[in-house]
Length: 454
Image 1 (tube, rainbow, N blue to C red):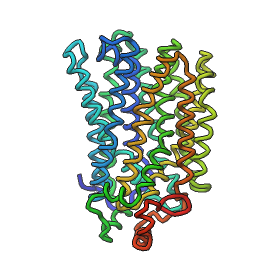
Image 2: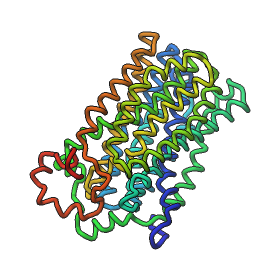
Image 3: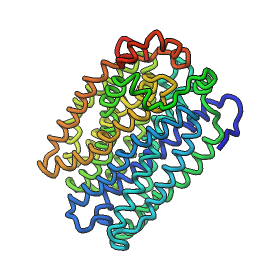
Image 4: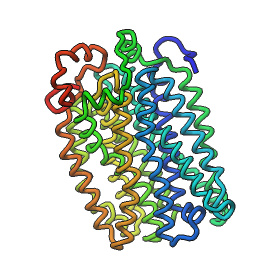
């Protein structure tokens, strides 16, 4: 797995190499979430009631998020010691192969309790791979970026969710149109998982041709490699880890509540046709991609912090209208609900790609950024659909879910203002020359808070 390319890669190659993994990530996670919402309850938990089966299926969905912090620590450790490129290739292989094998797991009717166990194990392995994917992808993009365009470059991997959402939904639409509902439940749902192998091959070919990032090479040349990056980041910037994790939960929660939970809610509770909902999400995806790209670029001009704070405010405002519009059963209004909801997501997710790694020093940046994203994903992506489903089952109303969204938005509004504005921060090894001078602040975990550079 050595580089076969020489010289600096083109902007297009960096864009594709950083984007392909996150596209596969969200494709894999989304098709799993869709299958969990539509068929996994019947196939792997048939003795449960409909609601309990959906909850159990979504619980296996959450397993992937629980595994992500472990993957963040493992891949971050070696990514900060050996390089970004190697870990990006390994994470891609682990993630893709686990997804393909999920499509091969027999149903409960075939092998009994071993079926959900295998499903959970593969989901766990998928989560470990994903734990190292996002951090490495944004570092690949931003560590090649010009200093004034890190936000824009970070948007390359950040548009992966839109690509994965469209690919997953298109495949499910095709399956639904060419086969009967019984055939889809029996075996048709497996095809999107097997199709992940195509993306895996393409991603591997592209990433093997990318050289290590210049920022990391400079750090190695300067001898600034630490023995245990995870310990180092907790020792030097614990406050940043905590505040960034809590502040970024909103981004991941918005995506999975609006896509995974709303799909289950619309088809199961509102009895809206599955095809209609898949089309709605496909239509909303380009808006999500455009907003992610646009707001990431905007953060290069006005700063990361104000854009993300605006996202938290807008998310709180939209928490109730999101469900009110869906409850009209009118496709146009449902589309508005989805579009604005995913616009809120793009508003915070765009700048996050640059802001999160900028908060950490290069010597443990892979570990810090991946850990923040992974832990935020447990609450935002793993637990939120479960919480929303449980609230709906207990109250038969979406009011509590809207208040849950508002609560997460308020949490972001409390945490994000205390993080440093890093738009003009030094992203190279030159930053590390200040380490001894800043040692007292580092020991208190203050470096990276508001008013200080990261």
